[in-house]
Length: 83
Image (tube, rainbow, N blue to C red; front, side):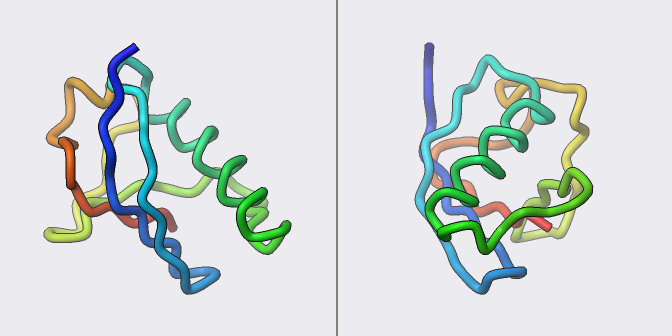
């Protein structure tokens, strides 16, 4: 499984993380994995009721949850926002 590292900003808890994400998974699955990881890292501070969206930090473009990371413009070093 190929992975890339991205910088993830989570405004709800005012934190940022460097995280590895798999390139062959759909963005919806990656969001689910990120929510679980951030919830654990923040000692339960991040537990959204609805599934958050993933955005490109540079242009505020939301990502289609039905495509894979590989099909998107997300690459090593990308800066993302989870809202």
